[in-house]
Amino acid sequence: MSNADELLRIEGIRKTFPGVVALDGVDFDLRRGEVHVLLGENGAGKSTLIKMLSGAHRPDAGRILAGGEEVRIHGAQDAERLGIATIYQEFNLVPDLTVAENIFLGRQPRRFGMIDRKRMDADAAALLERVGVNVSPRARVRELGIARLQMVEIAKALSLDARVLIMDEPTAVLTSEEVEKLFVIVRRLREDGVGIVFITHHLEEIAALGDRVTVIRDGKSVGQVPASTSEDELVRLMVGRSIEQQYPRERADRGAALLSVEGLTRDGVFHDVGFEVHAGEVVGIAGLVGAGRTEVVRAVFGADPYDRGTVRVEGAKLPRHDVNAAMAAGIGLVPEDRKGQGLVLGQSVEENLGLVTMRAATRGGLVDLGGQREAAARIAGQLGVRMAGLHQQVRTLSGGNQQKVVIGKWLLADTRVLILDEPTRGIDVGAKVEIYQLINELTAAGAAVLMISSDLPEVLGMSDRVLVMAQGRIAGELSADRATQDAVMSLAVSTPSTETEQEAPRGR
Ligand SMILES: Nc1ncnc2c1ncn2[C@@H]1O[C@H](COP(=O)(O)OP(=O)(O)OP(=O)(O)O)[C@@H](O)[C@H]1O
Ligand SMILES: [Mg+2]
Image 1 (cartoon, rainbow, N blue to C red):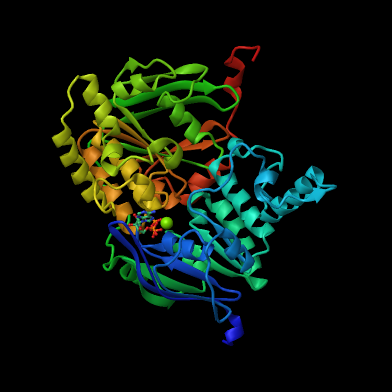
Image 2 (image 1 turned 90 degrees about the vertical axis):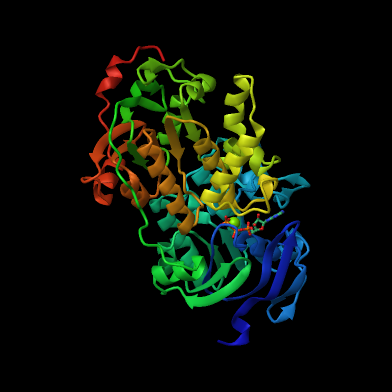
């Protein structure tokens, strides 16, 4: 390799936050035309490291070199000047602006001093086509689902013509089909000589896309290996031990139906959805993004209304669109969008963990603060939440650790029916197993678990039964022994029968 191929070099970077040493001497380098994967557990320091390159944070010590010269990256403009574009783990788009406005924010094409909307929309359309996403440049970002938001972020980075593209868990929110599309784009960029820093918790993506891997553990770079390294070895480097069983589902005794959903319909969104989840059972819901899975569980939980149908918990009918009634009946929902719906970012880990129990407790007129702290400490320990202490603001936890807090919150509440929407998105391989163990404990204690996941091996590995949704309907149900990737996928892309439509009242 000639020196001319080196785009970036990081030497001995350190960064501390109050109470936390986030980076404790990290070395890293990036070449032209490579995908360099950053691998590490939740809280290892991956996002902090890339924030040094995007200008969001400044290092306390250490050097950054670009093309062999030491540089200071003190803000987004420095990064842009050096040709570094970053797609963050938590989205960075402005909800009320259009897709095109977001892509060209601060750089809108102008004509006679005015923003040239026509050109901006056309340029955005071309970029979106390059990404392969079917979204209008004029759509408001607030109207887009999480997968499309990601694609818009990528289009935005492409528009910057970056020499270095940093992607922090871009695939966490994508389905396998969308991941394939993303890989095509990334490979094309690599061929063009772009250097790509790629963070992922999906180990199988490393061999598929990567060239080199730098492993970070506890803020230190502990090794640099080729992307062809075996998954077992990668796990060992990353967590310091091997993982015996990735999906340790332990079947529990199946009891009575705890959750019964019948004929649930929200016009134009989902139709005639019916299923039961029994005590002791884990029921998975598979399907493509946009199949209506999140919409159904939000309606079941009372977060959104529905037009027809019933939701029963242990036989008792729940009023529609009433979260408090659902919670009082023992339903809990871990939402897919943790930042928007799951957490109060400005509050501490302890306060967030107590959010649900607190509500229950104060309703009874009694708050057992000591007991609550003890319970919070226990669950945080079990999930391995990496934090300075229970007092740490959730905002400053790493992405995966925020997700652990959302899950922990509902595990602490006394839920009989726990609904998990993409529970392990952004969770490292070791912590995933801890979450699966907790799911086992819940079902062993007689709870019912309904789990949406786009991670097929996870759905197949942890569910006792799999429901597959397509186009707002249940396209089929598979028992654990019949649920294979192929069986699920062929249902997920099917067009479910629409006969029942005739029964729907007219005039809507
Ligand atoms: N602004 C901040 N204030 C305090 N601590 C912080 C701040 N930002 C990050 N940290 C801490 O630094 C450590 C590293 O976090 P970072 O976000 O880099 O982890 P990560 O490797 O990206 O993890 P994940 O896989 O969960 O995204 C964590 O302990 C985190 O809580
Ligand atoms: Mg991160």
